[in-house]
Length: 341
Image (cartoon, rainbow, N blue to C red; front, side, top):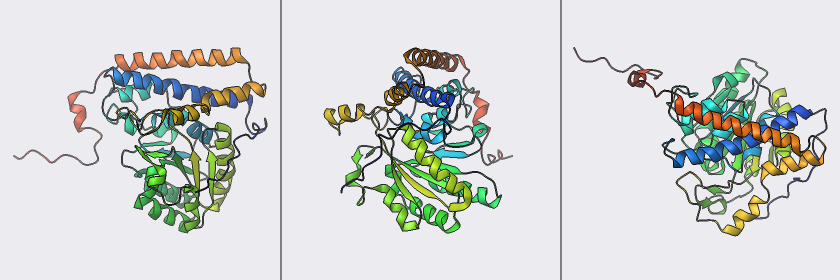
């Protein structure tokens, strides 16, 4: 199938849309996610992090570009590739790292781990390990927003493999009927685990599925933070005004395997090298330098600060206490049955 061209070479936004400080914050958060994830992979290899772990390296522009177009009180929710989304919302790196270390100082007291980062204080409603499990939840959040007549939106991130779950179709159908304030963003990194999208989707332009629910759909260059910002900013205004839900397809690429246990041997070296040329982090940096937003010295300073922050997060996580045994019985949905007398 012929894929639609994307406007990935558009100029940067005008100053009335994003200030210099906001543009530098965008780069800081993207570089933070990149450095944090690189160090996460290292700590996983050292045995400091257990369980499943899915890195966000290569997809930083999707989360950061989106969040820059939202208000602080808007909601975001996503799947198990969630570290980057939490950092994009402003969650401190030290508590995210502590969560992955399984420490009580983590965002979920060490009980969630890599796939279940959560920060209610920033309306980040968490990552979910079940593929597509967050999609009906986001729809429920959208219903709550509308029921309470709140001036908010909910953004739901999910991978391309989740788009074939039955819950996707059920949730988008209901959202369209009730005109819920939800923006569904499928992060199409072209592989569901190790299976290429052309083997799983009859229609590879995933945004076209929006037409089945009479909602707007659009493909966005997910390797370009400014393109993501521009698209989400446009649609969030319509959604907030009662226009109903939207489906965006962020065309991105993960530079690492599906998880830390995946060597990614199903793709060629040439394919990876081609995609690395589109790396969203240096791409944004070069664009900002070209536009005169800041010079090399400013970016060097930001990068050194971020590196120090991530190193401090690792130290913090390593020095934090493990959960006490009795914590096993805290924060559960239902009480355990009483011991027989």
